[in-house]
Image (cartoon, rainbow over all chains, first blue to last red; front, side):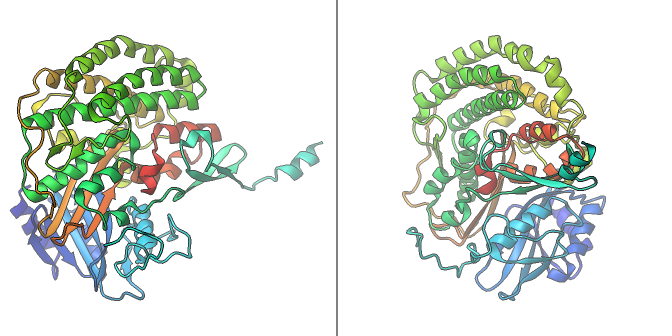
Length: 151
Length: 373
């Protein structure tokens, strides 16, 4: 599907969300409470059919924390990016995508481990790489006393 | 007598064993906590992070040419392809089109990387299942590829030969001759691989019908690379979103529908033939041209987000760079194929024998530094 058509189809599925034609892919910014609804609509709709979760990235935008989902359709080979943000840095919570994509399970554990974002409804949310004494290293305000690299 | 046995192995109760982190068949520091009922696997929980180096965090304080060298250390058997992924992302962001010469050389080296990675897979997979001879045969042939790398790139495994805008240096004058010699040699010897292992009855008994994954599951779990293609999931990035010179060559995407351990192995065997075909089409036609574009000494990407995926020997590697206009990236994410392929190990091995777990995890061809990053 062409980028314009995909943006139009996505806009009709994701109401109250911001749909833009980004540099590379169509981008949708969703409120955290609508995330699961929007993504499962994008997955099960015949036109968009975004059935593969390629990548799930945790982000720290300075003030907001959030996640970026790269979705691809194995049938039409188009890609789409979904973003969601939360401003609560103390106790950030986003709905888990595990009911929609099984591959989200490990990705979300990684994001929880490195950025401290909790995923509501995740079946097994434990730290993945680090032990519980660590902070959340991928946050921009993380202080690392040992690392000699640094800007 | 019977009562004594009963007290050692209580009925209807699971017991838990650790496989790894120092188990030879996990090829690195992967720890699998396996719940067993007798000999039957009930549950597998992977514990990872033993060599987590925080590459994504380190990238945030490094310049783009420096990041290249970190990517070698992720999937060290696809080092060249990992480098290429970052280079392609940076070039896409800067709007640079590299010369055809660079594209051809990158593609040839990527396919050589794929061949040597699959050779090592074959070698170690045979060893895991009890055929130690495979290990010697596989490493014997892999040395020849590594020698080609050494001559041109300077490194054998950690090549760091790609740079944003082109290559580190031009190819060695011997490169084409030696590559052709290797292809000629390997076409003659590859039948030994099938003679030794593929046709072996014990091997087939241990792999056929073991660890089945359906196409729907493969997509749901995001399994890419040979693992996904063995289940009929057409996911070859080289075919669907061609990069470098892959749009100039013709090759087949290997697909099987069985989705068991044997066909994950078979995909890799067939891919080596395809890789040799790709190299054949390119090696004599490397065009003249610059081996690198003129790049500024300090590379700053324009503000924005860039995503590029490539096909490594194990699946789709995605590089996601968020730039705020500085010489350091704001955030780098590597979507590594092994990390995603490890997650469904539990559903694949549930209900199989403990000995099959070795075959299943071996057929995923896991590289632990790529999982941990």
